[in-house]
Image (cartoon, rainbow, N blue to C red; front, side, top):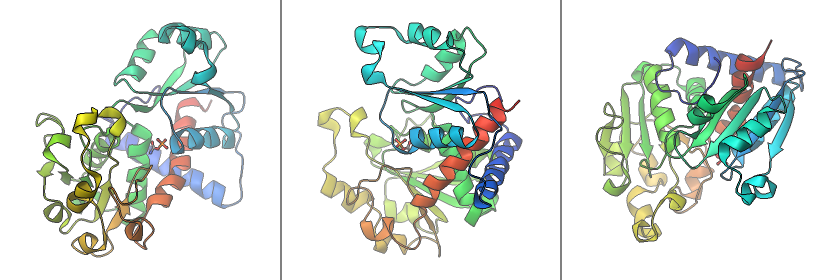
Length: 304
Ligand code: CP
């Protein structure tokens, strides 16, 4: 694997290898190894043009645990604010001999553009671009599901919320489909569903009670207000009534259904606290798995 910009069309064997590698990383950390030297001498740049808590921190932690040097590029104090163009920034940073750039950008396709414009052998890892892809989130969600429900072929997974703007939903569908899951349900207000031509093999629902019935895992999504016009913002109380996950709705799902959310969560808008903090919640497990998945991806791409 040279770059990771999307999970779309990634072979099942590659996804499974990355998940297995993540488990090995988790086991190494569980046995007290706080630092491996797999990436000693490598330099990784975190280039985040959009805010992040989980992804940026876990990429940094993953890189450090593997012995790499990490630079967190601060966009606010960079020459981007003086009008420097993205590709001039890229070439400037490449001249400092980086091994990998982890990039998040509001514009879909930016990571692939960086791959096309890169002049050195730098690897590009997508940490989320527009509504297109968030491949390491897709992998960590797959890993979290596999820990509890390894039989992907026989799973029913419901993804609910602002699917239209969600790169997580797209990468989750790509990961789950590659691993053999056929019953993937998308649910949300009609205005927040992707075009019919996108993700055509998923079932679509606008009634959350129907979408949740018998589900083995539910992935809740945040309303991405930053990608909506002010006039398109739903009323939050009404939204929670129709699409919020609470105890009553969770009872419609299969017994022991996994409750997931990529975060950040908005309590009382897409998920009730009683569910987010409840026994079936895997939300913090997802966060923990994010470190191991990112260790696996960095190790796969950069270990000598
Ligand atoms: N899941 C996710 O991408 O979270 P952050 O925006 O905090 O990185």
